[in-house]
Amino acid sequence: MLDAQPLCHVGYVLDGAPQVTPTLQWREGDHVYWHGSSASRFLRAAVANPVCMTVTLWDGMVLARSGFHHSANYRSCMAFGTAEIVDDPTYKEASLEAMFERWFPGRWPMLRPMTTQEVKTTTVLRLPLDEAPVKVRNGPPVEDEEDHALPVWAGVVPLSIVAGEPVDDPRNVHGVTAPDHAVKFKAG
Amino acid sequence: MLDAQPLCHVGYVLDGAPQVTPTLQWREGDHVYWHGSSASRFLRAAVANPVCMTVTLWDGMVLARSGFHHSANYRSCMAFGTAEIVDDPTYKEASLEAMFERWFPGRWPMLRPMTTQEVKTTTVLRLPLDEAPVKVRNGPPVEDEEDHALPVWAGVVPLSIVAGEPVDDPRNVHGVTAPDHAVKFKAG
Image (cartoon, rainbow over all chains, first blue to last red; front, side, top):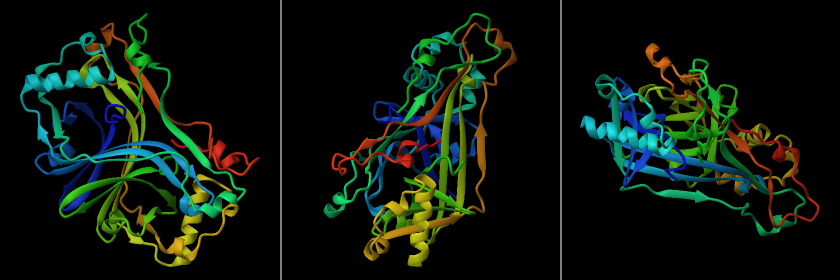
């Protein structure tokens, strides 16, 4: 599930109040990783404090014969813990390479190498998946037995994330076309 | 944006630690609403404490010619504040009706009325949109001028939420077909 849905929401406490920031995560082994600018207030606040990273796949709307039994189909994972900074520059860059391999296989070797300054101004965080309960709801509505006789349509409207055709950057070098990892990108 | 994307993530603090719970929101005027079971620990913890509700539309992956300038296109709104319970049963039920009208226009009058017990065991919360900053990133990659000469494909992989064909509940009364509000449901 974590591999299928990069979008995540990281919750942390700043001056006593909750903050929920969307970002993209990737998993390696028993950790989830995310990254951003080293100047980011969000990343600094998320370090060495408890965080909750939630990943959600919204799979559908569930329409029942009564208002009360309407629901949503989804899969979600809430990972709780304390994030740590991936400090070592070599390991940090290897983590970013792993992120590329997860989302865009084969792209990393096509790119110019990161500069020392770029690596320095990127912060990578990781969170162990020690406490990461998963919740799932799927299937048709579950409702009161007597309501099945009502002549009201019930069922599920399935929802999914769809990747469209890649849009070329207007400044692409002439003749360069979208590679497989862009054409076949998939989430959800 | 809030009207286009019901999926939200509500952050609150429980015993000093952040919790981020996915749920569905709807907007009426200058408030966002969400609901659930009155027994829900999540809803009880979110009341009378500061919360942060974040709504995110993930619009695409942005592929640049350098690893560093890769990004994501998105729209997000973080609403901060203190949630209040919609206590009055009449107003509570009217709020739920408004939710149906937002997502499934015309469905509410087709359903059997909610029972008093159903209204009682449903908790509706609302949060004023007083402090709700929006962030947006769109368009092609922005990168170092000299990198434009690299023969690497750059561009955007657009992402969207797509609703599929409604799936009939196996126990639908014979001859009942999916209404427009199910066929035309749209998010994103």
